[in-house]
Amino acid sequence: MKYRFLSHTADLKIRVYGKNLNQIINNSLLALKDFLKPKLKKNKLFYLNISASGFDYQEALISFLSEVLAKTYIKKIIFFKLLRGLIYKNRKNQIVIKGKIVGYRFNFLQKDIKAITYHQVILKKWGENLIFEFVVDI
Image (tube, rainbow, N blue to C red):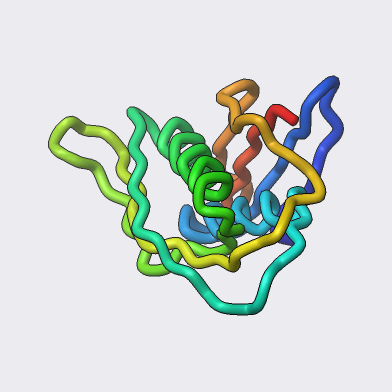
């Protein structure tokens, strides 16, 4: 299992599973794609360089997913994978996530996400794996 949609009072909570942060990121992108249910155009891949940062891993992940969501609406591309992802600390001691995201153009989205929030965000070890939970405002 890569992710699960969880019930939440007014929004949507997503629990993502992964062996490392790159898997957490890619499984989060898949969860967003599956929730939005895009009507795709022809299967031509599009690539976009992206970078986001935060003062801890949770903030960096939310910042990264928020940036991807913004690019989704601006570029009309549904992104589903991070290629050549780098996660590191910069000189300001911030966590940086950068790399190239890949996706397909879409005609429309069947659902909508207003924002990815910091509300109830969790990133924790679960045995040998990681769990990442976050809430999206729909």
